[in-house]
Length: 415
Image 1 (cartoon, rainbow, N blue to C red):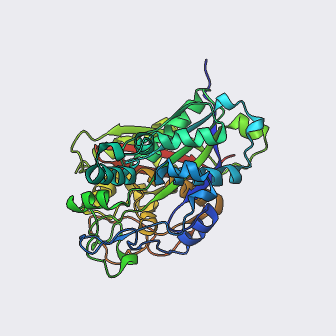
Image 2: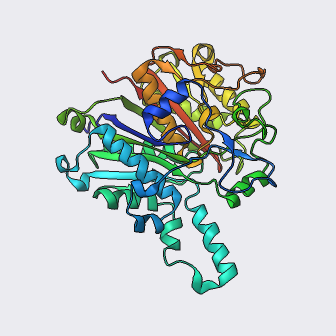
Image 3: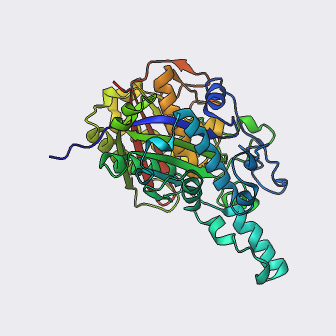
């Protein structure tokens, strides 16, 4: 009988508005620091929302040849940088691996929107023959995985996942399944997003999805589960984790942050942007996660929630958690780190998996900042405003995406 391989996380890498590596990011998050400010990459004066979690002073040429920088989109630059941080953190050396058994799965919800905007401007102003021959390979979502593999010689399973804001979690989950099945020994997985371009920003504004009431107080704009929440705040960046089979990690004496013991995915099949108002899709996803991992509700210590700071998500997400965890729901520690990082869309799952791994490693649960006004529809313990010390043996990260996509991952202390 086939016995699935155990899968562990041995490396963490990130790039966000709160720092260029995981140590800085984690320090800022547990301090409750916000990475949200007024937009500077374009003039936001005429936009209803004027704030975001931008990465500033980033030099892609520190991670890539300048020619490759010019031939690729910003979301690719972020993925390459975060992966290099992961490689360094994991003390990963390809010479110890069969390159055909090292994979890359980097998700993006939107891909090269900055390239699309810039090339469309050239097309309209200068004509079709002035568009770049690198336009197509710059904008397609799979290019982050492709470039990471090309730069590092990783020849194993390689693809992207596009499920809007659930993309990063799906990427990690699919990597987990491949490793369980013995299709690879190690896979770099997560998400990367650089959607803070004026075009995509305008689109989200017109959906009335983003916060508009805190333009003069940007750090207060993302307020998940708070009664005054009025929309999400867009962020940008990348979160990449290294997943390995336990055999591989032990053979090279790697540091093990935690084990992945479950991954589930489903669809609300309800609406293109609104989550199921009964919370049934997410509830089913979480129930399946408990079943797949042979866990009970009482085993779970911490949930890194999707927690977007939108009226519908936070209310329906709370409802789903209550449906699944019942009386244990009141004992769960739950936080939305999007209150500090902003919503990284397709990269959210990558960053939030890192937070789960760090919570298990350090015994510190990051807060939900800006939780000031209780909402009767959001009545769980959201670790309001200050990080807490609390032993975490089992953590869940769950994400939802436009189209009704749901994904959930379970992380467990490695024993």
